[in-house]
Length: 410
Image 1 (cartoon, rainbow, N blue to C red):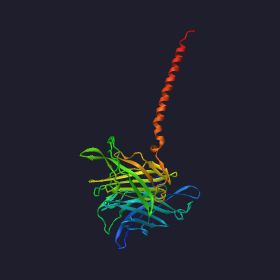
Image 2: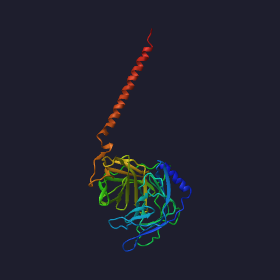
Image 3: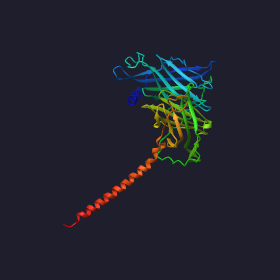
Image 4: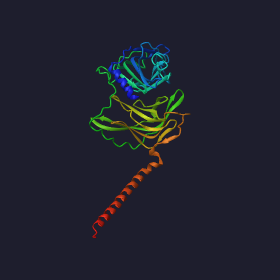
């Protein structure tokens, strides 16, 4: 399916995308002040199954006439939400979060209706589907996010292509002149973008030993409405390669749970835990489900310093796996490689991103390092080595005996 979507995407980009208009929307609060301003062009390529059990795709463009019913400005206990409605029960929504220095789009949720006979005349399943993609790129609070080039968002059955994007989620009834451009916009007049992780021919420096003190264990929760939908308990220590006085220095530091806020979101098949350590470090854990098991798929780390901020991501993980409805538990220290210059060390991890009931952890599935069988590994290896030595010795004796027999006189 992913290969099929990639082919569709290549065709779209090769044709220069479909022609579409840009929609512009504003969300206002009770005092009629603008809190969210958005303008963008969007194409959706949707793959679906037909009544003849074949796979087809259609490309649909968001029209210029849309509504924002369901959007919210948010408040002290509620995050802003942009909902763009169009077509026959189609919608595009963006969930936002912020701190003093940055804001971000946490998730992009696209809802489409295969019961629309005009777009899906031969759809096998006539129902409403939801496609969710977590994003989380930090944007300075005093800037408008701008991306003129194409940005592609892919999920299992949908490819979304955005361009000519202008987004301001905390507008406060003013149009900010400062622009924060995406990395693909080649211009010298915009604010610097998040640096990308590049591959160097020079090997990364080896991390220096971590401090003796272990990080404190923090307990974190994510809520869906008033219910707890994700729970986590862990100690976190980061080890980053920083440039100090022209030299590369590995700098370890702990995430302090006493000054760390936890936010995030939950869906039927995906979940996000975002930890914000006093507005200096943001660590995000993205979970997903496969074959009735959940696992950690992606870790994203943003570190703020005097010169701005840097972001590192590893989205090809397969860690912390357990059955949906249970929790994952590992007391041993674990190392997560986020990039060649940033590592995350975890201690005493227990996490449950799905199926949380009564805000308590369910049955724990322990990692192998914690199991009673882990000590058998060196024992088994030692036994195998002893057996091989004995086998070689016996073979030597047999060979020597046959050699002597061959030289006996008749």
